[in-house]
Length: 440
Image (tube, rainbow, N blue to C red):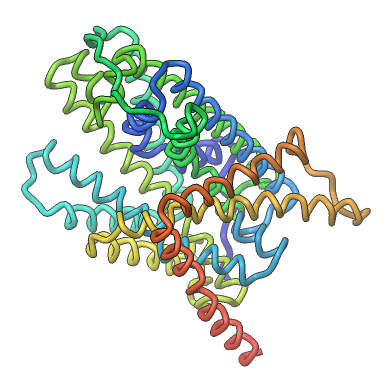
């Protein structure tokens, strides 16, 4: 039986981490934050806190990867620390909603920008389907091909963001705009900061998907932790630079008044053509994010099938390309179905907090693995340890489940639907485990 090949190094891991985080949100979310908090220091503090949480998450996953360099990443950590049923629910929501919905939204967003830029008169959904299909095909050709495509897009994104920062530094500053007259919520500045942190934390999330590629990393116990730290740190630097430039060029009032701060700054520098330039940058960014998600997510379904709790055909590896072709095709097909249905935004609203549910379980998993390894004299010493554990790990756990509580409090209906989607995987898990026992 053919197996996956270890072809990816530290540079690939770091770029996959960055590609899983940076989408189109960083070009829009600074305005959302500025509407909640109305001063330069508060805006920058929100992004600094978000960056600190992201670094905590990167460190947490780095130690998990060093201690348990198992195929499937977060899916495997949850399976081994708790129970396969909980791990199955994680993979179930990835396939049914999180990854597929995110990929569909990215493809349609790309199409919406690309069609006007090129003058194509075509339904954005058709272009989205062709785009998802193209990345599905590329990733079926081999992990090196898929990773190289993702790396190229990530390099272009880094260059584009760097160019944007330079342009913002030297562009003419906009005329001062009075701050948006929005009163702070009843909790005052602290409550406003809490509201601002929600879009910030979601903009920083995504580092966990790199752990899905463990089976194709060279020396994963060393490669993945290094890639996680370098990748997350790189994103923090880029995000802080983008926000500093946005505040400098537009002011807090101007930043809060626009929905597209990046386009506003580009227009200051280059006039009307600046908006088209920035539209091209956003299109490339969403395309790069789609490429990343198509690369990483099928590896979870492959591992679920290998464990015998999902369709066994998904564990098949092509003898020539050495990738799980059927798992990749399944992911592409469901993403296409979601894109055509035009329900991706509603789907994403239902499960905006689901990732943070499992981030919390990842933190608990580290406590479990540390306790187990302390009792096992044969357990190897990990090459990376979470700085400040157990306090830093407990802090990350509190933040992760605090985000979940915040979403459930503010949008109980969407939260309940998301929980229902999550729990719908339990009867499916029962069917597959019963089939496995019967065949055994």
